[in-house]
Amino acid sequence: MVETELKKLISQVEARKSEEQVVEVKSAHEGCPEKLYDTISAFSNQNSGGTLLFGLDERQGFARVGVYDAQDLQKKVMEYCEQMTPVVRPVFTVTEEDGFVFVSAEIPPVDVTERPCFKTAKGRLQGSYVRVGDADKRMTEYEVYSYEAFRKKYRDDIRPVDGLTVAALDQNKLEQYLLRRKLDRANLSALPTEQLYELTSITRNGQLTLAALLLFGVYPQAYFPQLSIIATAVPASEMGMLDAERNRFTDSKRIEGTLPDMLDGALAFVRSNMKVATKLDPATGARIDVPQYPMDAVREAVLNALVHRDYSFHTEGMPIQLILYSDRLEVRNPGGLYGRLTLDELGHAQPDTRNPVLVTAMESMGQTENRYSGIPRIRRAMAELSLREPVFADARGEFSVTLYHGKAEEEKGVPMAVPDEKGLLEFCKTPRSRAEIIEYLAIPSAQYALRHYLNPLIAAGVIRLSLPDKPRSPKQRYETVI
Image (cartoon, rainbow, N blue to C red):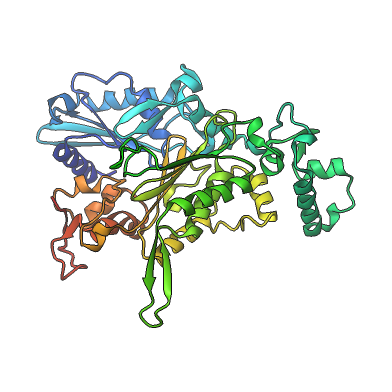
């Protein structure tokens, strides 16, 4: 950053009196701070990187104290960075204001193929950190594994299953699948069964695979009880709350079977527990049923969870969660976004595939298109019913999809709660310009940032325009409705 940007960052931290996901404040008034490794690792392991800001004292309410010696500080920070694997190359900026000297060290993100970045002396498991809000948290063993799995291209969907025999598979389903594969690929039709099993990943080095069990098993949960879906209908907007009859759940079910079985079971659960409104077509008088959630969107959300979840030994004890709250439906699966894909690119860029065999097999079985159309279809299905955009979240080894339905309060003009993933409501308690909001969001595409984070809050009535009659005015300011 240039000096003017550093001065602006100092002013922002002073005004907010807080650190952020991408900003860590250190005093450095009496010397170089100790234990910078955790933050350097955490910033290096997130796609946005981060900035170490020296010269403000958090203990004094982020007061200006300046640094002891800008040149020596830079030297010592560089020494910290050289003790990381891979070595980190920070970018320094120095400025002076009000008689104080301030230093920033921008920590660039490490490429996904080189993560996690860790303190060399501590090792990968003990020295790797992730940024959570304004805190640095040690990575779990699973989070470290996730990066290694991508880097080394582990194929957990076709790992061999000890003790699994052909007798545990539904032979009719397996034969029908192989017939389809032979029809799709004529060169497979003349191959002996053993070779065909290997080429279609039914077996790997002669052992039956997890994919074979999940696709054709008579009862897959006999081997992996938690590779299932836990479906719950909650009569309130939060787990643990009771309805008027003191029911915690109105329905709860463990959905088991093969992947197609679980997909059908999840859809049946949603159909039986969601409400369906009945309206009359004003032109024809015909009855029109309007579901709370479009089943196309529900199907894609569940299907994505089944085929893209993590199937490593780290997560084999974690089921998929399908929860129907009073105001929303959530689908959560173990395993965050895989590879280089980010939330901002979801549905817009071709992703890396965690379980290519499962995806290909489900395509051959007619369950999925395998054209990366799932996320766009969810968005489109929600829009067709004039419902809010779905919310996608990726947090520490879990990916979730949230679908919201219309509520009576909305029809009366009362805005419903809107997820504020970026903290814009707090940020806009002070009126902000469009440029300030774009900078705060730190998303490369300004239009995407405004469309996906600011506009929903405006539509819900929780952020207002200072000049509502001139929405594109350069003097426009956005302020949280208190």
